[in-house]
Picture 1 (cartoon, helix red, strand yellow):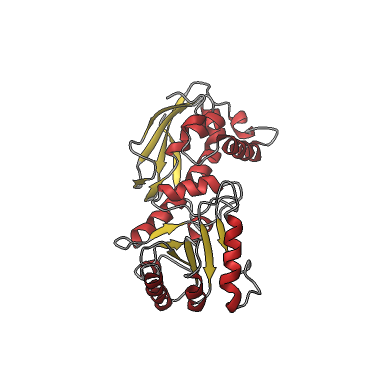
Picture 2: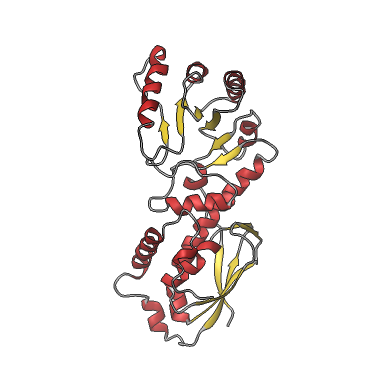
Amino acid sequence: MNLQDVSHRLPPGIDSDRFSSLIALARTEDLGRRGDITSDAAGLPETPHRYALVARDKGVFCGKGVLAFLLARLAPEARLTSVIAGDDGLPVEPGTKIALVECPPATMLSAERTLLNFLQRLSGVATLTARYVAAIAGTAAKIYDTRKTIPGWRELDKYAVRCGGGCNHRVGLFDAVLLKDNHLAGVSTDRLAEVVAQMIERTRRLNPPPRFVEVEVDNLEQLEILLAVSGIDVLLLDNFSSDDLRRAVQLRDRAAPDGGIELEASGGISLETVAAVARTGVERVSVGGLTHSAAALDLALDSLD
């Protein structure tokens, strides 16, 4: 597999220049100005050796779509000879051989930890997302991520969420409108509809328009008021109890029977509680933990020679 000029092969949503800069930062962080002094001292052979990327734990492997790109920048001498079949986001078991690589040992050992850091993080996010998705199977709800991502990793984290079967919320502050309680601080209940309508009117002047307009509500009273406001795509139900979530769905169904307004539950949702939340009838469940609390999936690069 040719590892040169593979930027066009990156999955949608991952910018090649930003990804290249992130890889370069990680490489410099590890090698500094002196390089891999351990491999230099070891006097390793220059002939290529074979290496296997292997899963050490059960989970979802995410990284097939970026593996060649990573290798081309971390180990330009490497040759990716095979990779697991199927789309990215594949389930793996302990011992699953994900990819085979041929590379001179010094080059591979200099790249190994940085390569695994990327792949283990991506796979950890995908694995946790897949667990949330499985927990709500049979409901109409979908799992969404948040902006609680590692700085510089936004595109990669969101790619991993997709590979785990989840959905992406807004990418950043630039692509969608989310009016939260801090935006509405000091607005009295009797003025809430008027103020939000004015804010939405300003969004209509944007070019291009936002992907969606979402407004956070803290209680059922606010929900009833905003269900009558035109231009809202999603209402965010922050820290609602399951009973209040069900009441919110009933109120929405009466006010917007065509399903024009979706409801999103958020706040303190865990793997233990997500199924109950999804069964209330909300369409969306956003979970910050997908990206801020995911544990890395244990992967290894084993020498076959």
